Amino acid sequence: MLQVLNHPLITHKLTHMRKKETTTKDFRENLDEIAELMAYEVCRDLPVKPVEIETPMAKTTGYELSREVVIVPILRAGIGLLDGIRRLVPTAKVGFIGMYRNEETLEPVEYFAKFPKNLEEAITMIVDPMLATGGSACDAITAVKNRGAKNIKLVCLVGAPEGVKAVQEAHPDVDIYLAALDEKLNEIGYIVPGLGDAGDRIFGTK
Ligand code: PRP
Ligand code: URA
Image (cartoon, rainbow, N blue to C red):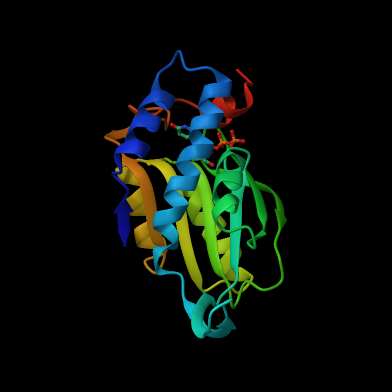
């Protein structure tokens, strides 16, 4: 399942992020706000369980989340989505996977992994602003599956058709959420029109 979240507020903020003159501060703040808006939609189908509660007026049945949520940002750029999602799901646990793309081969290289223990039962959200060739996302999904994750959502800001296809072919069971599906990849593996290098723009490293 691919869902492109065409909400006017998301599109407005993303357009600001795309502009080359947008500052690091503005880029980061808009990404944080979009993460929160996306989380609202991504969490729409989280399972709930009935609980008996007592209000000041009466006993009643309420509903609480019945499964743990684990957010897994792909380092570095995925960190930019973490706080916004955690504001909506403050009980979520967080795993990390560190990956960078070899700029020549475009193959992802894993350099760090640390996950909470409960992945079998959890809803696992892998988050990264950019889904380009899909190599990083596919490897991150494999990494959480190897640790037992079964219910996996991939949450990205901007995706290329090539990356979506790669994930759908390698992991057809994973739901993909994007704020925008862009036109294509260029010859050096960057998304066009995209927004440039997400990690560099979040952390001001270029
Ligand atoms: C970027 C981005 C994704 C990856 C997408 O990370 O944040 O993780 O590239 O490309 P792919 O779909 O072709 O794998 P990058 O390698 O630039 O590392 P960084 O987050 O540390 O900047
Ligand atoms: N990684 C990025 O940060 N941007 C792209 O366009 C592609 C990969």
